[in-house]
Length: 295
Image (cartoon, rainbow, N blue to C red; front, side, top):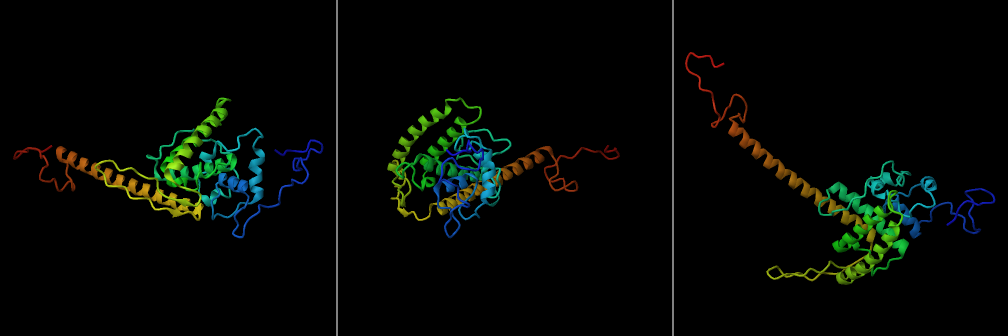
């Protein structure tokens, strides 16, 4: 790890000769960095494929404020990465939020659309960091992990454990316990990947066993993996749209039930449904005799 030169005291001078930092991020013709470590850093800052590259000077400021003993993956990423993709790529304070959110387990079955979109992109950034940091192979971490629920739950639990184990108030031994969890997780990942049959260049849905009385399961058709990042973006958009449709249908059903209950209550109380001039057939009217004051 490079640091300030002790003799000159110049923090911008590298310790070793020949390791000067480049003036700008190396990029391909379409503006995408080619260095995997830079890609991982940009994803942690909220950058997504297709977004404009942020200014390098903007990226240096927050990183210079991070202490040398800070964990390599920001524990506050869950609170910082849930903003708009275009805005997140240009903001330099994503790694240093004022009030990080508490770490809680993620239940993918109950997330609403907005929260699910945030969690998908945060989990994606963590998976990239995990692959680059520990050198996980496609037999442990295939590119199409997001299309296999068993891998999503495994990686999501690992990320939650990482955030909890590297929080400021965590036990000093928590990082070591997380590394033990990582070893167990890698063994399970290899088993999941072997069962589902997804590879680096080809993916197919996880096989489902049909129980007696159910319709036979169809044989999954392999699909060639050509652009993993684009497929992930499409997958997240489809998942968010499906959750929004479910929320809209549930809200419509709730509104109908509420309207029916209000209607029954009004009928039972004798309250007019269409206004004071139209009491309705079931309304209860006071018994007023001739010549008596109704009041």
